[in-house]
Amino acid sequence: MKSYSNHLASRLEYGETVDLSRKPILRSSGIFPVIKNKNFSSRILFMGYWLLKRNIPEVGIIITLRANNGNILLRKIKTITSTQAFSVELNSLLSEIHLISDDFLGSLEIEFNTTRDMVFPYPALVLQFFGEDFSSCVHTIERIYNDFEDMVENEQSKVPETGFDIHSTDDLTSFAAFVNGPLKNHDGIIDYIVTNSKSEKLRGTFHLGPINPYESKLIKLGEYIPELKNFLENNSGSISLNHNFEGFYPRLLVGNMQHSFPSVSFTHSYYDCTSCNSESDFWSRTNENFYDSSVYVPLFLSNDFFTELIIYPNFSPSDFYLDIVLYDAAGKELHKLKDFILIKNKDSKLLKINFNKIINELNFDKNTISSANIITKFVGSKIPSRIKFGLNVGIKNSKSKLPCNICFNTKVGNPNIDSKPGSFHWSPIFVQNSLIALSNSSPKKNYSKDANIELTFFRKEDSKTLSRNLVLTPFSEFRLKLDDELKNFLKEEGWVTIKSDNPYIQGYYFIFYPSGSVAGDHFF
Image 1 (cartoon, helix red, strand yellow):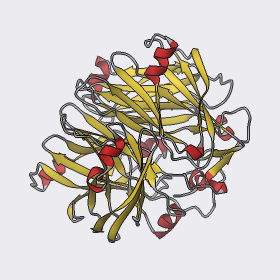
Image 2 (cartoon, helix red, strand yellow; image 1 turned 60 degrees about the vertical axis):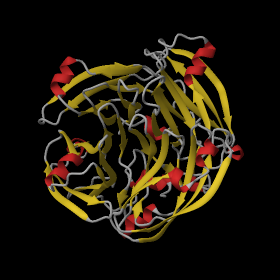
Image 3 (spheres, rainbow, N blue to C red; image 1 turned 180 degrees about the horizontal axis):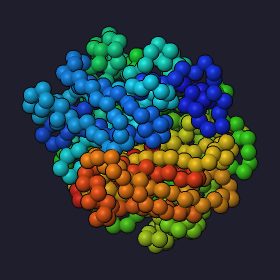
Image 4 (cartoon, rainbow, N blue to C red; image 1 turned 60 degrees about the horizontal axis):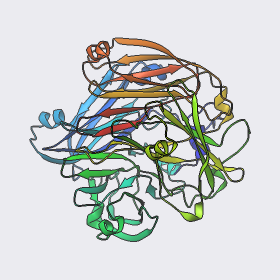
């Protein structure tokens, strides 16, 4: 794990001093476990954002499909010279090599190469598993390091992976999946700590055996942890996985499978920072005009929808209070739950905040409440630099029993960001049942700045675009559902860019299905 301060400097974050010895990023890559079976398949989605964001006129792509054992099945080279939407379809790649299978597990690696600095070594890609009445999405997870210097920089300290929901019932199976790097692992070893809904702990170790270079592994946790089902007692829990993997950035694909309605809901793992207590693991409070951190979350509460905030026991040693401020779509503050909960490091609790329950207890009309601003207030002056929560959105009484489980970070109250002239975000957008939610939300106290926003839509068919404009007042929210004009323009999945003169734009995308399945993630 790279220190947060080094992360900001190496990625040219606004207001940071850049190390003159910083190496430019000429290769950016992602590697994903992919599956095709009788119920669903896989694809990778992206757009040519480098041409917009970095003014890079041409990007070379290498696409590599590997079998489960790591052997290369297909390698393709392409060139991107436009900003349109693109997809890499597993079904199409398997057809090219005449591999007909309803039981394929392997990997897709996509490498982007340029002669100009791309800044980020991990590209903005989206992995989607999709079936007839469900899908699940997550942004770039693993990547193979560019070189030895890259590996050393990112392995300054090794920490476990955590920060996601697990289930273990007769119908639900939790899993973790990854693709090994170029180094053979003679025995993959994982030490685990499971936390159940009562915050009780279950510890143990399991072995994966030898793992070949680039081998894909799908770990069904219940098969390695026999006590898991009884320990979780039909409730969701969380797990911390301390591994001995080397040679790749180990952001795991994690989630749950449902058997009665064959489907998957996944997210990515995140750093377990409970042992991270050095000076570089904290951010000093430097300006009392800002909250320690805050984040916008959209609320879905009507018609059997539910929204939950999950607080995992994964923070650097610290205690903090959580405020919850509820808003309507126009940004009017409806209610503030001050010091709603105190999270104590020594308690190591897994906490679930049920917004439906909160709204019912307040006796508010669910249709008037649009969003919440989650504010952290840390005891003392040191603030953990990495603050990750989970956002669950689902539909009760439906075929799908699994909500989306979005891993997202709060926005640290960084005064440098306040002088940033604007922001640029982008998100995939889907023709069927898609919703984009965005807000003008800041960790600044007494925040009062409007945001002028231009939405530009990109499609796969060609490089034509369609644009719309809007204004968001402080803490107001805009939800975009595709109208006929957008559906006719896009025709299939595409992308939208969100350009603003305000640095505090936040957002998420969702896909809702009649089955009750919900896919979602945060903006790039």
